[in-house]
Structure formats: C-alpha cells, structure tokens
Amino acid sequence: MRYVQVDTQSDPTSTAHPSSEKQKDLSKMLHRELLGLGITNATTDEYGYVYATIPGNSDKKNIPAICFCAHIDTAPDCSGTNVKPIHHRYYDGNDIVLPDDSMQVLSVAASPYLKEHIGHGIVTASGLTLLGADDKSGVAAIMEAAVFFMQNPAVKHGDIKILFTPDEEVGQGTAKVDMQKLGAQFGYTLDGGEAGSLEDETFSADAAIITINGVIVHPGYAKDKLVNALKVAGAILDALPKNEWSPETTEKTQGFVHPTAVNGIAEKATIQFIVRDFTTTGLTAHHRRLKGIAEEVVAKFPGAAMEYATQEQYRNMKQVLDQHPQVVAYAEEAIQRAGLSVKKESIRGGTDGSRFSYIGMPCPNIFTGMQNIHSKLEWIGTKDMAMAAATIVHLAMIWEERS
Ligand SMILES: [Zn+2]
Image 1 (cartoon, rainbow, N blue to C red):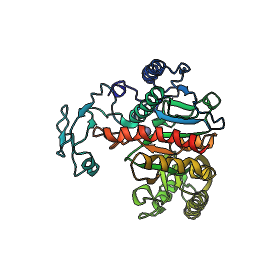
Image 2 (cartoon, protein in one colour):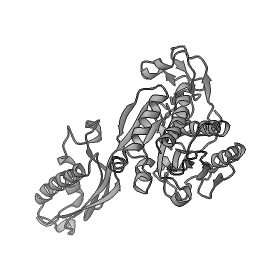
Image 3 (cartoon, rainbow, N blue to C red):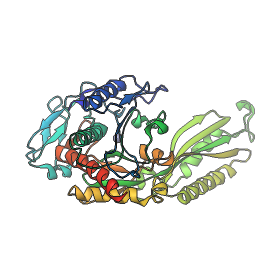
Image 4 (cartoon, protein in one colour):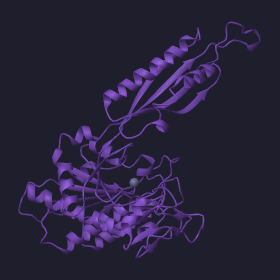
C-alpha cells in the first residue's frame, strides 16, 4: 500500500538512467527501510538500483548466494501518479466499481481469478491510475521475507542478495546493474501472476530490417524506368500471410514475425520487424521464410534491390536454466512447501530474468499474484502476496538444506 503511492513510472522516450528521476524516490525509501531492518550493507546508487545482502547464518560454507529481484518502476502505458490503493478486506465476490471513475468495473466475468479470493483481501486502485502491483508486489514480497529472516535467525540460509531495479518496463532493467557488486550465483525475479506460477521460458527475440532500394528518375520522364521503393515495401507487407505467423494469429508456443515500422522515400525504404520464437532454430526458420517472401516480391520489380539484416535482441532463458536444473527444481519445491501447486508457464516476451540468465545469473520468474497489469483494473490478492513471501523463505531454506 505504501510503495504503490510513490510515482515511479519509467519513460520510454528517455535515454537517461534511470529513465525518470522519480523512480529514485522509491529506491531511497527501500534503502532506508532495509537499513531500518538492520541490514547495514544496503546501498542505492545514482541509477536507482538498490543492493543489500542478508549474510548467511548457516555453518555450511558452500551455499550459493541467491538473489531475489523485483523492479521498482511502473509501466508507461497507464498513469502512475497519485495512486490511491484500496484494500477490500473481505472480498464478497461482487463486481467492484472503482470510486474515482465509475466506468472502471472489476468483474468476476472478466477476471475469473477473483473467485479464488472471495473472503480474502484484494487491493485495487481507485479508477484513475494503474495499481502498480507490477512489480511493487514483488518488492513487498522480498521486503516481507527480509523482515522474516532478520527476526528469525534460527532459520538457516546462505547469503541472500536483494536487488531492486529501475526501468524494467522500458527494457533497461539490467542496463546499469553491477553484477560484481551483487555477487549472486543464481536469482529469482518476483514478477509473475497467479499464485504458484513459475516461468522458466521466454521468447528468443531478433529484429529484422529489410532495406529496399528503388530506381529514381524524374517523374515526368520515368516511364518504364522508375521503381518506387515505397510500393515495393507495400507489396512485401501485403505478401505476408494473413491467417498465421503474426502476433494476432498465434499463441502458446507459436512464433511470429511482426512489422513494427516502415520508413522511407520513393528511392529507398526500410521495414523493421520483430521476430519471435521459443527456439533459436525457429528464429532461423522465420528469417529464412521472411527473406524468401521479400525476395520473391522484389523480383517482380526489375531494377529494385533489397538487403536483409538481423539483430539479436534476447534469448530464451531456458537454454541457460537447463544447465542448472536445481534453480527451477528448488523453486517448484518451495512453491509446493508454501502449499500451492506449481503452474509452469512460458512468457511470450522477455523479462529481466532472460537478460540476467545471460549475464551470469540464471534467473526464472516467480509469481506475486498481480492481475490485469498495466491497466486501471489492476488488482492483487493479499493471500497471494503472502504466499510469494513464503515461497522466498522456503527457497532460501531449500538452498541451505541441499548444499
Ligand atoms: Zn513487471
């Protein structure tokens, strides 16, 4: 309730780190609270990251340092200014009309997961803003677990690393992270949905850029000579399959290509694509197919020429996690010890965890309970948040037991 009232919206148009200075308001609050818990090594830096270590208290000396990570920023898609969280203490199963905008109605019909929270607490915003459970519920779960460890020294664990990051929502969450300073071998982001969910797979992602060179001649004397690159670009877009292979026609484990921008003049045009799949061989096949379609179109415009370029964006974290199966296995066990059944899921997107996994910290994603994220109807159940904190505690205990 306290964390969501701090406006931490990140800014996709900024190249600064953090992208918005106000994110540091929450960094400073968390820094103070960690110090207040007696975690004297807690620090925050000019980029808005917060680092802290709860030192191990076990006699075992070979326990890997485990990081728990959450992001402090909220999505640019929806206002995060003056968030007024409302705690509905005993949710009765009825639709909830948000008080500051009666058009915003949270209903069981649209959000059936609400049914599992009847008789329990849920938190919503007031109708004018998002709630910010994404990802302040992750922050709260980690802080709650920190309180537990500091107050229960009889519970044995290795070094626990706490990391709060800015700018996850604008794809810059790991941009200025100091992995040396963090010093963790494995990590978990707390940035997932329904209780029990565990995400160990993300898309693998590339960009593709098709550049078309036309033939330019004075338009008054262009007969049989001019080739307009814009028209070639239009023809390539038109040649893409209509009923498959796009974000709007695929789900689950299917990949796609998706044109995101067209730029150009008659002489020269570019089409930018994002290409997504769960496997690298899938990505390669998508590139081959896209290039083939484009070449076939360009061949119908004698004189026009094209280039096809690719750019790696991020890779499926599973490729890394499969080399360290205990990371996911212990998370499954911790979720079960917290009394939940595990829901293994794949993310049709990237996470900070996919980037962490490739810069030395294999890092799946654990639930916090957040629902309807990036919208005014965002909500979260308080029992899910408590279960997320419990899962963190169990995870640290399991790493100690197995080392
Ligand atoms: Zn998030």
